[in-house]
Every structure is written in C-alpha cells, then in structure tokens.
Image 1 (cartoon, rainbow, N blue to C red):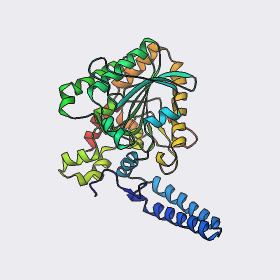
Image 2: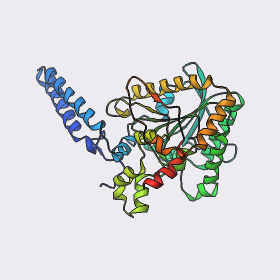
Image 3: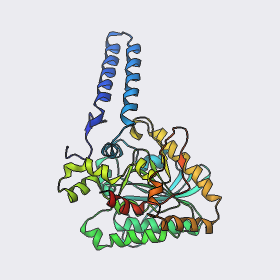
Image 4: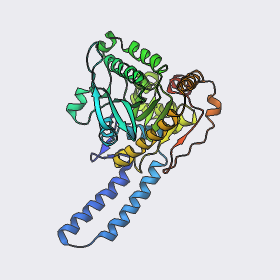
Length: 360
C-alpha cells in the first residue's frame, strides 16, 4: 500500500482506474490524429466511450471502503465553494467568533436555496495551495466551531433553517487549538445544536473525519453523498493505532464501516445522495444539483413540522442511538439516480463510536 493519502494517475485518475485512464489516452490520441490527418475517427471514439462507461459502471458498483475514501479525497471533487457558487443565491458571509478570530476552515453565511432563506455552515478545504494553507487544509480550530454555533444562534433568533456541509479530515490537533479549548468547543456545539429551535440539515459532501465533522453534524436529518465517508478516525490513523502500520489502512477502512452504504444500513444516516457515474469529480454540476434537490425537499418536509415536535423528534433520535442497531443493520440499501431515499427511523453519527469500536 502506498503511503500517499490519495494516489492519482495523470492528475485525474485514481490508482484503481487504470483501464479508464488507458481508454482516455486512446481517445485523446484518436482526436489528435483526426485533427492532424483530417480523418474522421468518431465511430472509434464512440466505441471507446461506450467501453469507458461500462468500465466505470463495473468499478463504481463494487468499490471497496478504501477506494471510497480515495474518491472522497479526489483533488477535483466539488468543495464548499463550488456549492456556494452554484447553489446558493445572494450569499452573504458572516465572519468571526467574537472571541479570538475568523477561522477560514469553517465558512458561515446567509443565502437562499430554492425559495428558502437559510444559514449555510460549511467546512472549506481550499483548492489551490494558497487556499489550503489559509484554511488549514480543512481542519478547523476552536474559533471555527465557536463561530459556527454563534451564527446558528443568530439563525435561530430569526427563524432561519440551518444547512451544514461537512468536509474535513478532522479538527486541528495542534497545541494552540488544544490550549484554546478544541474539545470543549466541539462539545458545546453538540449540546447547543441539539436544542436549536429551527430545522437543521447536515450533509457530508466528502470527508467526515472524527469530532471535526461531528462538531457541525447534529441535526434533524443527516445525509451523505454516495462516495463520501464518515468515520470516528481516518483509516490511516486507525491502522497506526491498532497495527502500528499505516499501510493497513485498507483493512482499517473496511472494519470502520465508514461508507454511505454501511452507515445507511446501520441507521446512522437518513439518506444517500447519488453521485454521477465515476464520482462527483466527473460531473460537478449534477452533484451540486442532487444536493440542492435534497435540501429543498427536506426543508419543505421539516417546515411542515411544528417546532416542538421537531425538537422532540431530534431528542428521540439522539437518545435512540445504539439501541436498535440490529434492526437497522438489516435495512436494504438501494440507490436510484432518479430519487433520493430517506428513512423515518434515523439516528445520528455519534453512535459510530460504539458501532465502529465493536467492528474494529
């Protein structure tokens, strides 16, 4: 196993997509020949395209847990900024925690999706090297979580629904972050989010690592993109702790049950949002549209529920974690490109600590 977190061939293809990469090269060569010699190779190119689609369907219908992690970390996967640009209208960012500073790893702001005014809270990894450094590679500091909960309380005051987009390897574990109360900041968010008197939708769009993801992951509905992952620890970290060998990350990923399919079967998430063939990085617009459609539909459902009932259902959801894992484990997993599946028996990610510890 390579030590690289995410092996990419030719800047785009993952290591298990070698056949797809070969077909791409063949098509590019035919296009070059066609432009140089003026010969029409469209028939051959269409044949290769059909072969490529079939190969992608074969690969992505049987991904291992470690391969899902690689797809979730793809450098061209849509980030928070893509969702803000393509989905949210009239976005106005809100800065600072009124205590220490403005953490760029967590972006908060007011915007509109469909006909609903919402508060967006999302984790930002950055695309370029400069952006990655500015937002600490998507690893929030305590001031980021304090900013998030401050803006959530602002949204509660004015009755604005909250949508959180989760995409982080984990909360920043540096000395400064610990000195400023990293664990306390996350714990306070868990407590306060469970009591906010507005609808809350949480969506994991990429990596969902440890408490860093859970710090903005408590709500009425929890959804994941099809090839995202949500785990109490990264596969590499788990392998290093259990076997003292990071090369065992693939085995750790399988044991952690961190894919959307596994978590849906366990009842820890409420919906799986389908991705385009070959992953979100191959069709950003369709991915963003699927997420927007899920948010619009779910918001409409939650708005029809009285606030008192919403809070009661959220409380029951949290309290039932881990009590019905046997029944949840028997849930059938089905993903349809034309519709998004949801379930009435939903629990949140907190019980992953129990479920995954038992599996490991």
